[in-house]
Amino acid sequence: TRSTRPQRLLKAVQKHATRGDPQSVISAIDHFCRHSEWAMNIGDEKGSILDSVVSEVNPEKVLELGTYCGYSTVRIARLLPPGARLITLEFNADYAAIARQVIIWAGLEDKVQLVEGASEDWIPRMKEHFGIETFDFVFLDHWKDRYLPDTKLMEDCGLLRKGTVLLADNVICPGVPDYLAYVRNSLSYKSCYFKSHLEYTKAEDGLEKSVFLG
Ligand SMILES: COCc1ccccc1-c1cc(O)c2[nH]cnc(=O)c2c1
Ligand SMILES: [Mg+2]
Figure: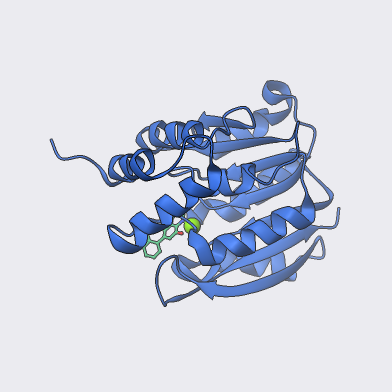
């Protein structure tokens, strides 16, 4: 039967990228998405903004909601200091299987824990299952109707501390209006918008950075 797009993306990584070289994995995926098949990775333009925010925060504990093929997982994990940990949640088992192999190809498996399942099931278990007290940085890039409920759930589970940075993808396209209204109006967040473009296109999209004030 016909292969899937994530399978074809992984093949492109294994063909063109150097094992253990995260930058070559990032470049191979961006080339595949620009010249072969569009895929919903954050991409190089928004990815550079992600890089700058991660570098500024320099987090020890990172949560990523929505792994897909592991592109942003690799972008984030390659910038983490030794001993830092990234937990990434992916609901779709087929995506998770591809992402595991992309992360291994990049040589970042020691920094990353990929967990398959629903974010709402795993967020309440971060403390007892992963020994996480609070996160320093959270990247939201999963189902748009889960951004707001999962943010409230993280608050309620005490997973955010004064200064925790939330960075949300796709706040314009496809758009997350309820989440945007919440973080921009809540006295518990300081929020700002980074205008950019939908990955590999000219359509507007952007990232919203929100600092939890406690
Ligand atoms: C399946 O829709 C693909 C698509 C189509 C048109 C516009 C945007 C998107 C899009 C772009 C993204 O960065 C995304 N990131 C995470 N989860 C998504 O569902 C997602 C969707
Ligand atoms: Mg996205």
